Image (cartoon, rainbow, N blue to C red; front, side):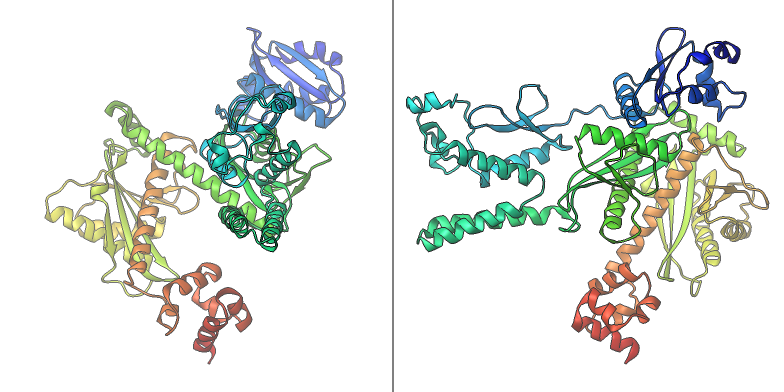
Length: 600
């Protein structure tokens, strides 16, 4: 549809809020959108200027437009998300999540059974969940079975059948796992009270159950029923142990949803934490694919709607890392600056970063399983992008690291045919450089690495990446020059934050396309050298190879020193703390020792 063709129908599009649908010439739905004013929003697609090339491509495919008027912007938002989930149009954000999540069902029947299911039927039963882990559901059911006696049989326990004496108690009754409702030994009211306790457990609300169990234990003890009192005590211990395993941020927090996002080009990762009574009862991370270069706010808004719908969330508070538009007046959007809600957001961000890193590891494993031809295609692309004389089948990368401004070490990783060659990884303890000098350290380790390869007559890499930018690249080139290796390998510097590449002597950097396979490989190599170097550093510290000043204080061990450094980041910061601040972190006696060391 051209702009002139659209102008002929523009006046027929209403100005009400609603959703619009674009179809191509095969009558296939390619895009669904929402709008406060349908005419204004749809007209913007047919203006002379486009936001980006992908939007231009979408407009070229539009052959037919349909729209649906709704009462409010909120209704438009909900309908748009529903249609995207149902039809998954080509140009909309694509939620890459085809899992079927398990539920715990409380069956609609006399003396309801409780069990796991993946099918949610419209049969009047109560479905709790869904849950992100089948293992977690089975663990919950087993925990419930050990603490709240319920039947597991499939008998038709109608009032009539029970009164006729059609059933006899089974082994579960004698084991104490069931109270025998089949013989009328348990009333329906008492049974339903157990079901209510189960719902509280699943919501993370164990307070009422623990209170009830303690009262029962006290009653049994007063009645001299000590065996029953002991049984209740064990149940209380079991519940408290279960509660301790839960991720509890604050018992004073209520019910809320927490979301964080990590965007990487056309891919985005969103983590969801469901909080009930201050406890994390659900966590899930999804991957989304964008097609029109949608901003983070729009992607997160879409993901929130989809996840809250999937997990039946009724929370009236949503915690997010930045402001978003969420057209639901009953929901409050919170961007926390500190406190427990900020801790929850940081926990979500930790989960979303972990999810992305795990996917990255899987991709490396997938690459290892590809044919030599497929793996070398990436290397040929990198050769072209960096204007190398041959494909870099052997790549090495160097990185320096230190801890709290002390204890420098270096690491080198090796990739052959695009995959890690871990037998060729090397660690370096700095020998000739005193203090922290990243430039001199880089020169030393590069010199030592390639002096050894020359002495042992081993193959040299085609490409060497210096993680650190222009300064460290210059010193690395000094080592190469002293070894007479100029022209026998290519060195590039990788800027720490910008992902820019520098060649020796060039004033301008080279920026590879953000989603190119070449840059993805360089990122993998950089991340691997960081991981390898940090692991080396951590291992040396744990073995006591070097210690910080805190560990030299008599009466202060490694765990206390690590705890202080993790919280306050440096020894210099710890020196400025008051006694009260130290007591709050490590207790009175150890705080006194540390304070006296620095201030006595």
